[in-house]
Amino acid sequence: MPLMDKELVRALQRDIPFSDRPFADIGLLVGSSEEQILESIRSLVQNGTIRRFGAAVRHRELGINANAMVVWIVPENRAEEVGTIMASFREVSHCYQRPTAGDWPYNLFTMLHGYTRQECRATAESISRATGIKDYELLFSTRELKKSSMEYFRGNGEDEMT
Amino acid sequence: MPLPRTAGGLSLDDLDRSILNLIQAHFPLVAEPYKAMGEELRISGEEVKARLERLKAGGFIRRLGAIFDSRKLGYASTLCALEVPEQRIEEVAGIVNSYPGVTHNYLREHRYNMWFTVIAQGNEELISLLDDIEARTGLKPLNLPAVRFFKVRVDFQVKGEIGVASDG
Image 1 (tube, rainbow over the protein chains, first blue to last red):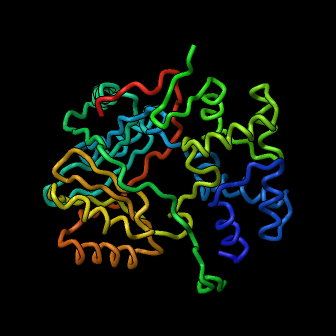
Image 2 (image 1 turned 120 degrees about the horizontal axis):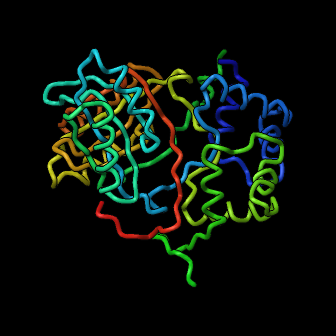
């Protein structure tokens, strides 16, 4: 990745300022124009490098206290089809297929969030009906032990080579 | 009529909620984004900025900026789980959390009770981090890197009645 882009990543992964022209301000940090910064962001959003440009909210502060990682046993030959159906539910924020291992038999993972556990259970039931998958468990979180944003290219100069 | 209270003690009104609903997935990528948000909400850009400051200070907004796909940046990532005896949870959490590459860590209700995500600059570094956790805790993490991606879309719908006690 060219040097400029790593600097851009570093600048963008911090909070953008609450100023009249925040992208112009970022441009000053990295020696680019406001329009160049905006174009770069749009292009990174377009190609998926930036998954989302916006606010990460503290959902627990907002009362969204029921957070379930629902794990499912899905036959391999149905994984693609089932995962796609699961992802179509608005309440599902994350959906991945992962490997099984030893005494862990679940291969599909969906994150569900709600105001109450009952809400999450009801959504899981809907997903189960929609997919025909009956083997599943809801693993509710009880404590958020750590929630941080990754600092990419923390850079001590060593990754500055292009 | 009192405004709904939240766990943090700061009250949110409908405008705050509209801002929070707008700002997660619909942040305007324009030169004057707060003014643009204000136009949508029929308030001034100044008020948008002021409310955002307050929401940030109040702990409702974690951060505002780009959320990157770590894999597209050349990083490796995975989800891991540990089976931690009850009396060792604080100790093990302290060890796991000490790595900057461990971004999220949650306690969950299951025999595998500690679930954490790891991001590293490549698979070697990732495995090395997990080996280090195993060496320091005596517990071997279950390593479950994604084999298929279906969705990541975080966009919480902020509703009116908050502060209701959950059973979670």
